[in-house]
Length: 484
Ligand SMILES: Nc1ncnc2c1ncn2[C@@H]1O[C@H](COP(=O)(O)OP(=O)(O)OP(=O)(O)O)[C@@H](O)[C@H]1O
Image (tube, rainbow, N blue to C red; front, side, top):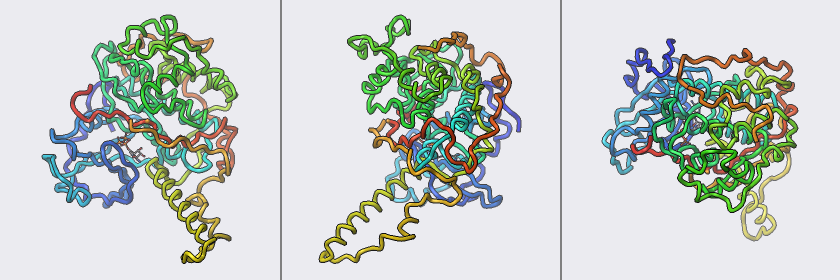
C-alpha cells in the first residue's frame, strides 16, 4: 500500500472505485443512522470479509452528489494511518433500492452509492453505554493516545476533522481506535487565512471560538472536542451538555471561566463576544472540579485542552508528550484490552428503547395481574428465565459490576489556567510544513504490562465513562454547498 505524501492525493490505486455494485455484499444488519444515511454491517460474498457499508443519502440532493460525501471521499483517500478509518472502495447500486421504493424522488441519480469501510466493532459512545461499563485508567490512556495520534496525523496533513465526538471514534476488538466520519472535515492551510463556517462540530463538543463566531480557525477546534471527550471519560458524563448555544456558552464559562483580554487577548474581536459577555467575570474552576479524580497529570492535560484561547490550547503533538501518558499506570497495549460484543451508538440506543418498552409492558402486565378481572393472563416473573432477560446480551464480555454506570440526560434537541508547566511552544505550530513526523519527542510511550485487570473487570479507574446517552447535540452538518 503506497501512502500519499502530505497534502497530495494518491489516486493510482483507486481507478477501480465505483466499478463494482453493492450486490457483491450481503447486508447483515444496520449499525448506524446518520445525517448521510444508513450504515450497515455487511459481508463481501466472494471473500467472506466483514465490512461497513455507508450509504450516501441522495434524497435531499437535487443538485447531484452531496458535497459532504465528496469531501469525505477526497480526504479519506489522502489519509492512511492506523488511527484513521480506512475507506476501501466505493460501490454503486444501479437502480432504486428496496428501502427507497415508493419515496418521492427528487434526485437525478436514482441509484445508490456506498462507501465501503473496514468494519469496527464499536464506537466509543456505544461501548461506553454498555450497562456496567467501566474503563480502567490504562484503557482511557490507551484510547486517548490513539485519538491524539490519529488527530496529529490529520493536522500534519492539513485536515481539520471538525466533528470529534464519541460516536465518530470507532474501536475494534483488537483495541484499535480510529477516527471516522470525515463528512465535515476540510483541508486547511497553515496561515489560517481562509474564512470557514463556524457551524461545525456537534454542539456539546464545540469550542468557544466557534460559539463566539470565529470564521478563521485551525486545529485547535479539534483539540477542544478531544478535551470534552477526555473530560467525559474522567467524569463519567458529558461535561457541557448544553441544549443550545447560549446555554452551552454559559456552561463553558461556569467551568472554564469567562474570557477577557488577559486570558484570551483577541477575544473582544470575535463577532459574538459582546452578545455573550457575562455581566461580571467568572473564575475558572475546572481544576477544582476535577480534583477528586485523583490524577494530577490528567487534570493538567485537561486544563491545556480546555483552554479558552485557541492560540494557547495544546496541540495534539504536545498533548502526546504530556506527563499523563508517561507516568504510571501507563497506557495499556491495545491488544490486551477486553473484547466486547459489538456495540454501536445506534444499537445501544435501540436496545435501551426496547428495554424501556419491555419494562413498560411488564409493568402493565403486573398491574393487570393485581386486577385479574381485566382478563390478561399473568406472566411468569420469577426464576432463571426472568433473570436471564436482564443479563448482558452476550456471554463473552468480562464480568461487569452491577453499579457505576450513569445514563445521561435524555438526548438534547437536535443540533446536542493552564497548568504550571504549561508552555506556549505550540503557538505558530506551522502545520503542514513537512512530512508527517510521528510524535517522537520521547519515543513511543511505553505500555503498561499489568492491564487490563484479569478477567477484564474494572481497573483502578477513576469512575465509569458513563453512557452520556444524552443528545450530544446534532452536528450542524451543512449538506449544501455554502459551507467551507
Ligand atoms: N467502519 C465502520 N465500522 C463500524 N461501524 C461504523 C463504521 N462507520 C460508521 N459506523 C457506525 O455508524 C455510525 C454513523 O456513521 P457516520 O458517523 O460515519 O455517519 P454519519 O451519517 O456521518 O453520522 P452523523 O450524522 O451522526 O455524524 C457511527 O457512529 C458508527 O456507530
